[in-house]
Length: 278
Ligand code: C2E
Ligand code: CA
Ligand code: CA
Ligand code: CA
Image (cartoon, rainbow, N blue to C red; front, side):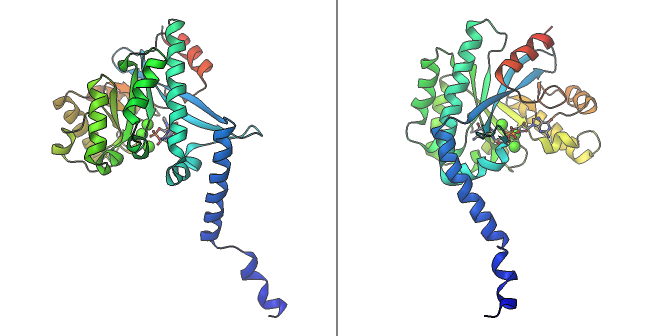
């Protein structure tokens, strides 16, 4: 090969190679992150539209590199899901969330509900039900202190054995939310078989609820559905007053979004709640 021909194509890796390398690098670093406890749990408040009170928080994982930078979930959750590492991450998240809630109860902090995100791989682990129950008893919590969030698509793709586990957890009093609701095309008949307590209206509908009649109609349908099935509704990703006004007027129960507060570390969350609660 002449010099001229060997240069360009060889030194520029294709997008596919680049992606594959990035994937492997992230996987390797995630093992290290798990070992060295580089994860943090941040908390985003959920407020009652009726009273303005903080009724719960969603726990959201963060990955802090040794240099101090934060890696957002979008950059590592998909990799962790593909490699199965998500199961270890989510076990840490569950335990940490329960420990945090315990701490709040001890200091008589006003928030009594914490939501954690779980995936199909988590539910599929054979000891999932015991794992969740043990986390509650280890930290002396009531089942009603905990909510598990599963995306609508996860719930749709999961089999009867997993649904049975969710039924067991629901029966013992743990709350179960359908995350990103409205994006997964679940049928009415299916929804009523799911052991759920809460529908989280996906941010995409909230985004356009003020100006798009279609998205407003979808939001209204979800709210109507929730009422029929006696489910609680949470609007995700509320970013402004106009959205809040429409969602409140339409009867959504709970608001979550940057308009109120971003996810934040535990101490900041407590300070935020103390300032905003009254
Ligand atoms: P999600 O469960 O739908 O969480 C909501 C995401 O929307 C969070 O992003 C939150 O910070 C963001 N958000 C909340 N309000 C607003 C808003 O008003 N505007 C905008 N633009 N965004 C808002 P985050 O923390 O980056 O998490 C992204 C996704 O990563 C989550 O989406 C969830 O699917 C996943 N994830 C996060 N933590 C965990 C975890 O501990 N376990 C698992 N399995 N997945 C997690
Ligand atoms: Ca969620
Ligand atoms: Ca969501
Ligand atoms: Ca989402």
